[in-house]
Every structure is written in C-alpha cells, then in structure tokens.
Image 1: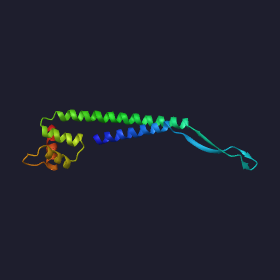
Image 2: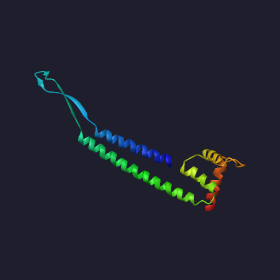
Image 3: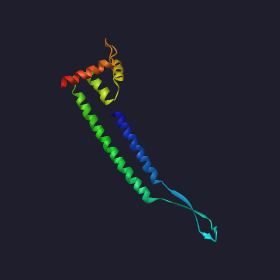
Image 4: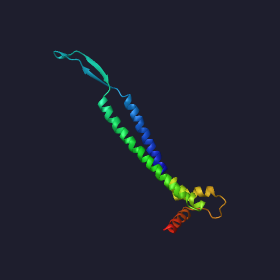
Length: 143
C-alpha cells in the first residue's frame, strides 16, 4: 500500500508540474505577410497563447488530479483500517509480522530478515515459511 501511495503522490506532483508548465506556454509561428505578384513581401513572427487548448488541458489535468487525490485518500483510509485491525492482535510478534507484510509491503523473506534483526537473541531464527505459517495459523483460528 505504501508503494502505491508513493506512486500516486508522484503522479499528482507530475500533473501539478504539467499544469504549471501550461500556465507559461507560449506558441510561436512564422507566416508570410502577403504577395506582390509571385514574390512574398516577407515573413512575420507571431506569438501567443492558445487559450482554448490550454483551458481544455487544464480542465482534464485537474480532473485527473482530483481522481488521483481521491484514490490516495481511499488508500490511506484502507491503511488506517488495516493498522487498526493489526493493533487488536494480542501477540506482539504477530503484530510486527502483519505490519511488515501488509503495511510495509515486504515479502515473507524480507519479513523474516526484519524479524531476525528485531529479535537477535531468539534461539530459533525466523524463516520465511515460519513467518508465513504463523500468519496463516492466526487467520485460521479466526475462521
């Protein structure tokens, strides 16, 4: 979940940068003044802002930003619900395992490494299967 939230924030930031870039957008074009017979009278450089195109892009980018912000809020709410549930688990080791796996999005191997770092004096070291089985047994007891 954390990685997805980071990705959403990155995408929102990119959209905001794009919106700021649109504010400073200026278009330049060269056109011929006219003709005297077959010869052109010269060229003129015209600069301006394509307001209709900018307004449309801004509207679409803001709409996308709003959608991403809503999705980020929804993910944060789900994260909070998961953390609240994890806090109700009675055993601290299980709480840590659940937090590492579900909140921090670590693999079972990474969970085992972190658990061994947190509990270095444990006689039997944590393995990925050990952590996964503790997790599964806890969930089976709930059913």
